[in-house]
Image 1: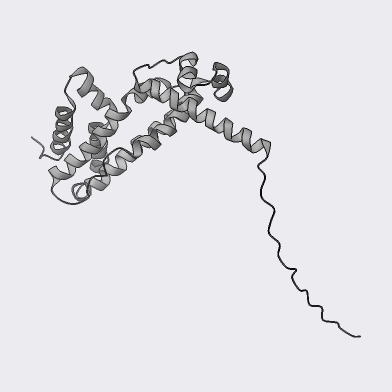
Image 2: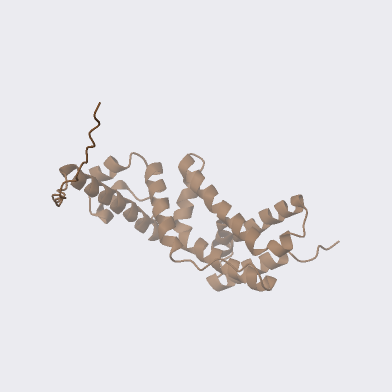
Length: 218
């Protein structure tokens, strides 16, 4: 039996033809742009003080038809969830850096307060609406829980030297109390009901954080 060795020589490559976008691609892009415009319009209206914007107002702000609003968002929960994701992208570029994990307690507390007070002030209009949706909208509740989880994580990192000296249960309770200090609900109480300006409110939050580590009074 004779074995024949076959050598396959690759053909000379030829340039690929230019890609021609399909009509479906154009429609998909337009649909995504419209959806983004509606979410941005909703956020803009909330930031402007309209906490219950109508579909007509959203459509006018976005420059689309009311029909387009309903076509892309079947209910307010879906729209708010989309807007919340967009809000996170916006805010993450604006707020100060995380607090340091070493140094004097008051300096770490001050930087943590600066960061979370800036965040709370920035998201106030959207957060008010989100809290109304939270009991009935699982996705909104999930995003709020995610934000609260970030706060607890940053608190543990910022005050690690102090927390490491505590028992597990004492540490858990201390983190919970510190989280209340930087929570949006606390910020709203100080700013809206107590009517402190931003600087005074931020100093109050800093004092609260520092006082959490003061020796207990018998």
